[in-house]
Image 1 (cartoon, rainbow, N blue to C red):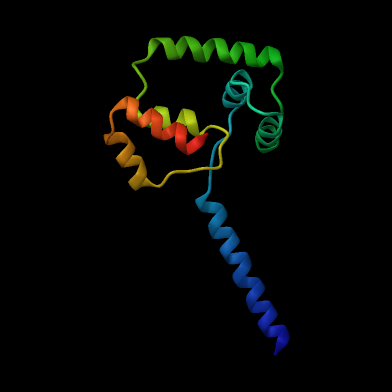
Image 2 (tube, rainbow, N blue to C red):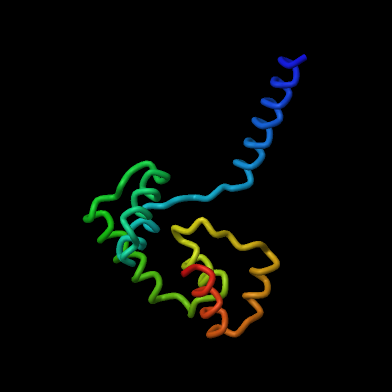
Length: 121
């Protein structure tokens, strides 16, 4: 009886872990790592990000990637609400739900920036 209950609990726990892992998917990029490095992120944050990325980009790679990303950023329009949110979200475990994201999108840009700073800093 105890063995059957332990087996059932183990199967339930493994099933819930798999469903939770499939919900929390995030794509890590070397460009984002380099942006964190340029933004003076803490060593702990960089170590965690490089562990999730699977490698640590070299400083030469970061220079090239940042030159390309800054050239692209200069050519684009002013940041939209989703771009502002993504910029604050980099390297953070905080993920906003859709209702809050929609409320942020409806705010004026200055107010949205203030709210994002309070949430992520």
